[in-house]
Picture 1 (cartoon, each protein chain N blue to C red):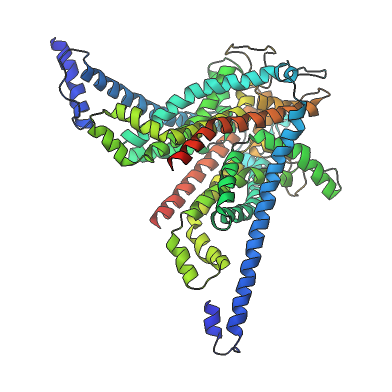
Picture 2 (picture 1 turned 90 degrees about the vertical axis):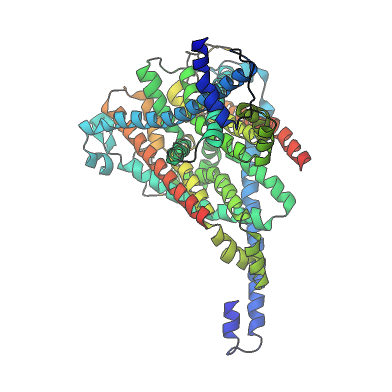
Amino acid sequence: MNMATTNAPNAPKNAFRSEKNLNHVKNRFFTVFVWGISAIIVLFILALLFLILEKGLPSLSWGFIMGLPSEMEEGGGIGPALFNSFYMLVISLLISIPLGMAAGIYLAEFAPNNKLIGFVRVCVEGLASVPSIIFGLFGIALFVEMLGIGLTIIGGAVSLAFLNLPVMTRVTEEAIRAVPKELKQASFALGATHLQTIRRALIPTAISGIVTGICLVAGRAFGESAVIILTAGVSTSGEMWDFNLFSPGATLAVHLWYVQSEAIVPDAVSISDKAAAVLVFVILMFNIVFRIPLWIKDRKNR
Amino acid sequence: MQLESSAQRPIIGTGASELGGSIKAGSGKKFDRKNRLLIYNRFFKIACIASAVFVCLVLFSILFFMFRTGVLTFQDVSPMTFFFSTDWSPENESYGAFVFIFGTFALTLLTLVISVPLSVIIAVFLAEVAPKWLRNILRPVLDLLVGIPSVVYGFLGLTILIPLLRDLTGTNMGDGILAAAIVLTIMVLPTISRISDDAISVVPRKYRDASYALGATRFQTIFKVIVPAARSGIMYAVILGMARAIGETMAVVMVIGNTPQLADALFKPTSVLTSNIVMQIANVPFDSTWNNALYMMGFLLLIISLLMIVLVRMFQRKGAQQ
């Protein structure tokens, strides 16, 4: 625009007009460009996910989902790995949800606004940014070396819980902070104690944010592999429904990697195709099952 | 009786002041409703404090463990060799980690070069160009993509991308830093674009109106007004994406080739800090120099990612000042 006004005196009469046209051409071009790039990228990524599901899901059978893995022959299943995935997920959530929520509630509700709490917040954020493999190394140092229990389900689950703790804390804090002040004041005005206010007013209002956070954490725990390889190993006990906390605990994500790059079974490609499809399918289900009710609820409230 | 009342008094005292005196006097029995509520409240608060302390404790014990084991490396290897030698052959007692440090930085840089422009374009598209119905579909989809496990992306890279790269270059080499950067780009793209999208969406409406009132086109408004106004938010997004790229392990392991040689070409099997740790840690005894060197590499990663957080906070503060 500047250009047009400064050039106008020396330029011929229609200079302003051509400048304007050029800008419009640029604008048009830019719109097409942005649409094009975005469409290509989004479609590309969605196509990849579709490809995974399409390659794996049609050939799935119960025999594969529940079957035992094999080291040498064709036809191994993913039963124990899939079971370990869910088992570890449950244990790690049992640890990380209460601790993470309590820490989040403290930061949102009780914490005074001073330097120390600022430091605690930096710690939480710092812990959230620590690469997952570091939690794996920490798990080795803690469980394998210090406690001497070897590569176990419990070691993996606790390391996973540590990984998810800061995420849970931050999500809870943000969700509770976003609750309108009036609600809290109304609850206090009715004579509720702080605990009653948190339990009956703040958490139910913030539940949508908290559940989204739990979804995120659950998906991360279900799909995480680096931590599990280091703390729970790459093999399973080879039995279905093995609830022993001290048996080795490769999960589905680990099994996918292991079959693809280390194992010598002849049908590795088909196993890993199907395992990847199951993995993506379960993660999608987590999101759909937990988020859609909230999404509908939010729509209704609007 | 005496003991009881003296034990109760401090509970009532602190409780009542905290709660704005909302609880009226109880019946005087030891476990009447009032005291029960006060005890619950108190216990709950202590549990919350303990959890917050626990989170900090986890961070510090990680720092402690990594440092304690990692620093033992320097008993056998001089820091100069560790940081600047390119010779990593633990079988022959040479522990030069420069290849991996360089690999990590090169990979992160390449990832950012590819992913940042694309992410910003997608963020602009989401926040400014797309119609509302498309925006309402795309945002949840991108959020969903953040949750796809990294091993799945690695698997895709291994089974689809690498054969494709082999075809394109016509050589046998597909593994390497370019393949890893493309896989990482797909992984960090949803993160960077969604956070940038949020940053662009909160730019005040009046900026837009003022720019249009001056006769600017949408292109000019977006690139001269809106993107500069959302700069600190976009930087924040980029740093988060960068942190994810630096720490990513499994997706990288599957496509990078895992060979300790310097990443001076796009198609050359190499190795980064994370991939080297995960490939080797299972096979070494805990007290060996080899193991200590791997922990030192982990400690380096830890320090880099904590520095990122300091950067992020700086940008957040800058954003808050604006």
